[in-house]
Length: 498
Image 1: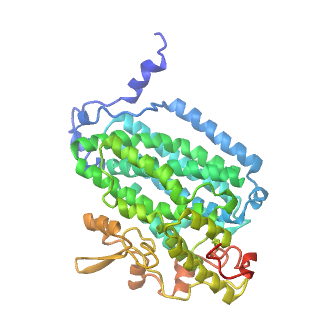
Image 2: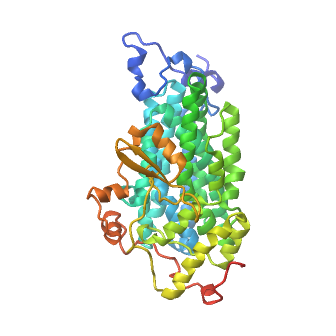
Image 3: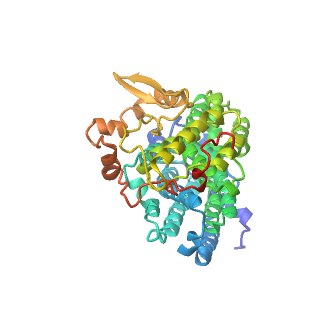
């Protein structure tokens, strides 16, 4: 028999669906597990994506990628190499590594569900590759950060975060469990492949890779570049799924895109917003977080909406306004409660605040006084005397995104309250309240930090809550990374015009 060319056999290998003779299609792919609306396979048979990779090709490519990462690690992945990096960047690395590793591991479950219940064989094949990718994406940060634990125990949270009850872990699990672990293949493809990977993480990795290169962290650059190339392939899974959903249920398609864009944005503001505007050393800041969002994320997302004939989310003006405020408000809140987290924070000084003023000219006059008050607190406590608000009342958290109630502006909080079955729920914003109102049974019973305190499951004393429930012990608790000992702090107190 003559040997076939790749182009002659690749589609035969990808499309292996068949008719069922002794069971109904609904039994093989029940709606509960395969997603709604339930459609016969004929409606999914057009499913296609551009990569069309065979297993042998996949293994060869991934082997080369792993060899490249390990090669870089052998050359510049030692403790002494990381010790040369700027302290601010190292804490950005701690934040990213901890929130990345087990998010990727959870994605294994979502992909495996699609590998079994996705409605076309080519979709199931790509989801299988996706599951293998996510295992790899879990192993890489765990491998690279493990060596650093004996140097700095905060790096242990790369593995530890998702196994704790820290408030940021609760927020991350709430997002990941719904988006990845508890979603059917259709919602998983739209939430993860279309919105998160196409709209956020794929582009985020490109931006972070460029920053890491400038900072001199070639190890992190190699890691995120290696992962990003897989994310680009994953992103293609969701588009044919969304196309089919739009043909049969356009209202649900619009809702899922709107919902998951907002949910992704809220967490993205923490992970990337903190890094780009506060934890990247000033000489290496290329773009502000807002500029990155406008140049990369917004343009990509709006092109996707146009391609599929979808509308911009109804909350678009609220979202655009938040680009000037939300991550700043979150960072200031987290800074004052930094002892509840596992990484250290940078206090923006005159030069950083001047840069932020230039990047956020419309709103920085509202935000700058917050940092002036925090700076004055350091002057009162004295250099090297670490202070925090840990002895104060616990923070409030949104009943949807589980993040701090930091939405709005310093003059007007955007919190909303809804009542459901006789119980009041508080939300950081109108979009979070809207998502809850659309699917209350999906969210009503989740216990956030405050609910756990009220139920007696967590201590109400903030110090005990942090140490015993969050698991943030004294050797890893977040501090100001310079302990308030900034040369500029000894100078003039007025930095507004800096």
